[in-house]
Every structure is written in structure tokens, then in C-alpha cells.
Image 1 (cartoon, rainbow, N blue to C red):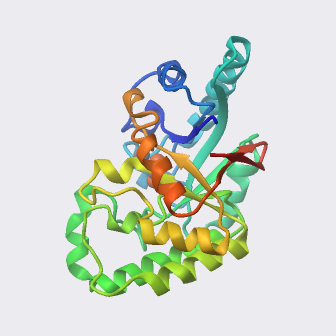
Image 2: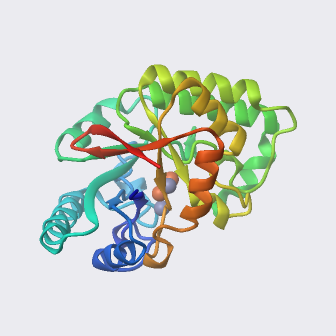
Length: 271
Ligand code: ZN
Ligand code: FE
Ligand code: FE
Ligand code: ZN
């Protein structure tokens, strides 16, 4: 059985470090079958002058990113062992679909990871904007976030939905029971044909819990939503972070396989 790490960033995003080859080296050491780079897509939903170079690469850097990953992919093929995939992590912001389509169709991505990091312009997963949580009733915020996530899943742009319960990042927890909402999200994912990402970055933030929560993962498994794996590494040493734990969680939730992607096509791998 060979695992994959499909959510790895590069220094181009302005908040990650390390050379691409160092990430590959870590993946090889960890015995991963595949490593997929998924750097943040340029902030296409904002006017150029408002884009934060510490959040995502500038638009003119996107071709270089693709080239660099493709070059490493070719090199990895020659070496044998861990395979390199070209992915991208793209925000879903309603109203900007045309621009998103234009950016995505220009490159041979193996997969596109869909994320919700912004709610009406508020970067809720950014430590600098923590005060935004004071403006919300926590249960309403969770409902609103998952609403956006369901829209993102249904948009047709994405193969994988990143860190499905990212809203728990700073450990602001809902008061109410989440089962029903988890089930609703899972059904929408199923109908949309997207896969859910099991992302170990949750262990490295105040939530101290893998994304998605165990109950959420069970809901995905019950309706037949496939899963894949990502560390969300922003430095080489986090490649494959806590994957044994993630794998245990995935199996415990009822899964017998994870999925991998090549040229936008999905493949199942027994675990
Ligand atoms: Zn990032
Ligand atoms: Fe993300
Ligand atoms: Fe990420
Ligand atoms: Zn991410």
C-alpha cells in the first residue's frame, strides 16, 4: 500500500519555505507513493492591487509554478519511486467563476483542491483576523461556512475539497450537535462527485484535530464520499505529517480505500 500527500505548498505562496526537491526528498524518505503540489492559486477574486503576496503567488508566477512542478515530475520519473503530481489549491468565491475557469483551464493539473478560506472577504483561518469571530454567533457561523463549502463542492471546479471543517481551526466550537449538518454536507459532496481531503494540518493548530472530525468522516463514509490525504505542509519536514494517525482514523471511519488522481481521473487504492 502506498500513500499520497496531495496537499503541499511551495515558497511561491509567500508563507511557505523550502525547495520543491526538498519536499520530494521528504516524501521519498517517508515512502509515499505520490506527492502532489497544491500551492495557492493567485487571488483571482480580488483586484490585482488588493492581492496579498503573503497569501498566494502573483498571477504572472503561475506559469513558473506549473513549469517547476512539471520539471520535478520528469526528474522523479527518471529516479523511480515517489511520483510527483501537479495540483493547485483554489479558493471558491461565488461571483468569480469565469476568472477561475480561465485560470484552471490553462494548465494540465492532475487535480484541483477546492477551499473556503474566506467568508464575504473575511479570512477566517488567518490569525490576523481573529477578531472577526466576535461578530458571529458560533452556530450561525458554522452553518454559513458549510453552506459555502457545499456551494464550492457543487460548483464543478474541484476534484477534492480541502480541510472540510477548517472553520474549527482556532478551536471555536459549535454549541449544537453537528451530525445533521455533517450528513447534509456529505450528501452534497456525494452528489457533486467530489472527494473529501483528510488533512493533518488540523493537528498543528489550536483545534488539535485532523480535518475532518471523526464524526464528519463517518458521515462521508456512510454516503460513499471517497477520501484522499494531505499534510498541508508549508515546509519540507511536514510532508506526510501524522499520516499513520490519519490512516487509522480513515480505517476506523469505515474506509477500505483512498483515491488518487492523474490527469483529473480518479483511481482507488486499497489501504
Ligand atoms: Zn498556505
Ligand atoms: Fe487551505
Ligand atoms: Fe493549503
Ligand atoms: Zn490548505
